[in-house]
Length: 406
View 1 (cartoon, rainbow, N blue to C red):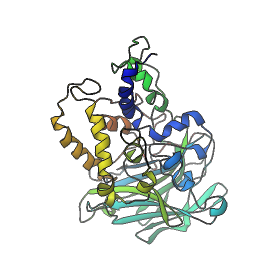
View 2: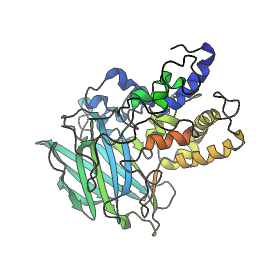
View 3: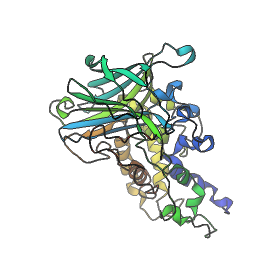
């Protein structure tokens, strides 16, 4: 396919949209699937150099979900790690990292902000023990109080029926599952296929419309792969602060007491934190590790300018006289961008636990968050990756995630 030199800048900014949410996952295309050490998902390998935060995929958060449970008075929160684990390959939660860090422990946190100040009011902490017979013990605490002691907590052995452990009103599943994330990564980052449909390709014979129009073969890159999932379900009453049903949720992991990763909404770090794939932040010093070690309460002060810069580039593509010759009136862009920056930061997964709706109200396992975020950040220019569902059905009841591929 021939692409005129004059279009090189257009290709770059379009690439920011088309590759944006794929971001750090692109390296997986050349490494192929090789086991847990090459795992990846919506927020995976978001440290500098395509490395997992903390150097261990067991502490590298892939995705965070929050949604109304099968009982409408309870809320389920799901956190996944060990992304892209191949079928029939057991993986475990971190107890210690290999080598010289053999005695350093990975801890898993779920934080809840009940009053809208982006500071944790409720802290759930998971601590995992040694692997014995394919099963790990675990402990769950809430604000320091033990809900499930290490003597009672047990993960589900690979291939076994899901084990539910309860204590203090909480219900927990911990173990391997199908990866709930679905996304056509190879097709999505293939910018060349999109050029014709966006009017940027002088060769109209390459049938790029099949990519944009979803008429060609679409494939979920995460089909057939597994993750390690923590599923925590609690009564809504335990999440409400002063009776307010609106809360913010995020997950974090620590290594020997030092936070190495955090995540609220999908793809915030990969898309908006430098060096990200959207001009002008494609080069320069990375702030991704700084973001992962930070706290949501500081996000607006530290990262708002970066989010606004990226959104300004993306929104300009629709403007009259812009890179794509759009017709949108740019006079309202600044207001829209400012409002969207206030939604994206701080990085919390906000949810009204009295409302059963999905993303942006929490995130259900089946929510097509890639399509939703694409439309938001590109002002409607790019709206789909053409994969609208997971490769297998989710469970309708606890633990909700699908069984791992074996």
